[in-house]
Length: 351
Image 1: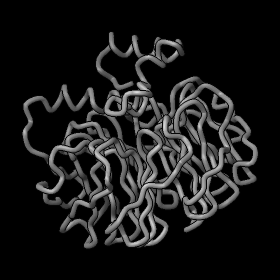
Image 2: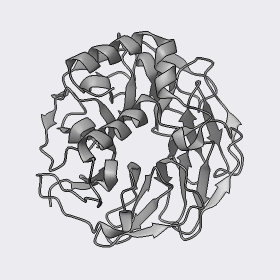
Image 3: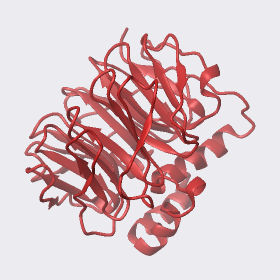
């Protein structure tokens, strides 16, 4: 749902109102290599083709806020979809062709890890420098207990579903979300998964838990749901719009922000009981959001990067040296990485 131009934008907004037509474009569920991440993945790939046609080598870019580069050779031309920073040294990124990339020195050197798959990987989350998980297409959930030296595939119980986002609050408890309202939960580090789905025909693109009980999911048609009991029950929250949301982040139990199509951004000060629309300063769709306290960064189509210092109420545009679609961002102590199409990797923050 990116801003391809006036005519395309009108078409996409129309599709957003016509659920059946949107389904045909945003979820090719049963074709493994075509299992795109809803509208989000479809248009990230579309932008890669438009903006990168003829590009034969990966590009590791950096933004304008005193950022550092990383070597490109290890990444090839994989489209990167997810990134997770555990601390100032350890970061993992995952991509469309099953790529898992790791740095243990803050980005000076990256190595590729073997996940045993060539299918799309969408999200990565580490609870410790050793213990982590990855989610992807076709029900894939991978786990490691040694920092990624060895990855093992777990049984998600949903081999026909893509899992777009995986989130753990500790070494035992985590959730993953996908299409058709699918939400699964584990309390034993991923060995077993229970179904805590929402019975609605929508795709969820992001999930954010601040502890074992309080969490939010966000997705198609302005869908935001909250749980206060660890996903036993979900309550739908009214955001006042039907615009698809791709990312959601909560600073604490009260302050939160969500981003989506055409730069649409909403904030709450009361845990989501009420939401208000704010200007992100971007007309491009925003695919990912991350925070460190009140400091938030969001990334999206055509290299769009925006930054907030007040939990999402006001935003500043950050100029980047790429026009690639950026799909994910993560932060640690004010610094971070964002990743995107054609192995674009930006290190953000002030150094």
